[in-house]
Amino acid sequence: MPDAIRFHFTSASGVAGEAGLLPVLPITLTYQGSSVDTTGLLDTGATVNVLPFHIGAQLGAAWKQENATIKLTGNLAQFEACPLVVFATVGQFDSVHLAFAWTQADNIPLILGQVNFFMEFDVCFYRSQQSFEIRPKD
Image (cartoon, rainbow, N blue to C red; front, side, top):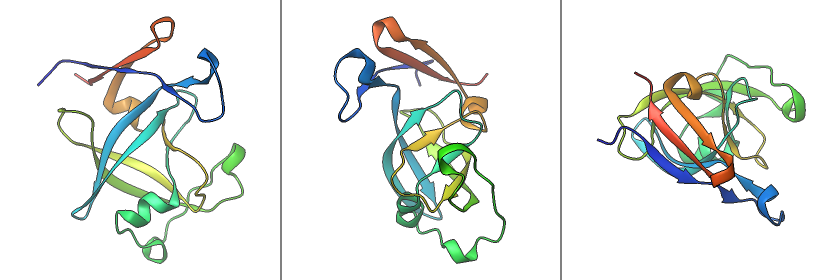
């Protein structure tokens, strides 16, 4: 298993040039035997990981079975959210548990935030090189 994996920034739709490049990470999420290959936006300013509704549904999670709620802020304050813990795999690293605020919003990216993506992985951004590096916590 490698110590670290480097990824290149990805172009955001509708934004031209270097300003439109974002740190987007390919990731596999698994919940109760179902898996989804997707991407997540690394957001050091986000307090929590946020999962769009359609990805939770693809994983087989049932919204009505979730009884706890999470209050989101900012652009997502108008949407309900509940906790959902899934296994996440990045590259060839061992799977980790990631806790998400699974929201009813669907027009958002999967967001990887402080709790708990950045608690499980160390990330080094090389913005001038348009890349970033991920390694599991020690």
